[in-house]
Image: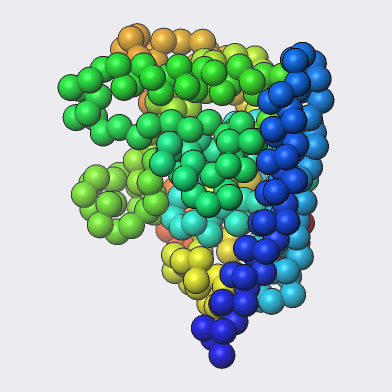
Length: 312
């Protein structure tokens, strides 16, 4: 029965994807063909609305088939027309489902920086393109050292994406660790954090530089799975009883908005120190959310609520 249940849920999600992506692509093609920028911008709310509807229908189905509970602690005043940089730790593809659950229709549609290869994902790759998700190369330090122009390409891709985002309500999502957490990666990095990998500051710095005052706050999101890091199959098979999420709204430090992260070493060090401090606090939040004794030092009084994983 379990394989049948997983297959049924997968087929329902696939059908919902087709039903939403086809009209989304039609709107995107019309938008691209329009001669005036003002007319093209008029299509953005419709595109975002279709994406939010897709997320909402997925959530409606999840509410009826899954028992996962998402427990959310919030220190934030969320705005559906806001301009946010959303920072989160990353453990599983389930993180994206959780983020959509927490934020759908409460802030603007989450937009991720994606690897270029993901544009070839059936249907979803085209949907991400239509929604102006930025596609970027992912290069190792060795590759950049051999070919510095690779880093410049990614910086320019960030600037082009952020130029579009200045004109619309936006929530730019960044998994700051750059990869999903595993014990092996944690050991290989010799990470100073108990529950996290080391943060990569460059992408955050480039977004703040490119957006300038176009962003009004940071949403710092910590996601914890007390039952262990799940896969998407675990979620569909009802093997994820609970997820704990902490949302903190943070001001954007004025002194970190317009520095030259790539060429100004002093600025880069300051930025990394700020990011490391944020990550130390996130590690403490993770410990509390996981129920670790070491994470119970400070108390706080955020708003708290619990929902099933999918309600939109």
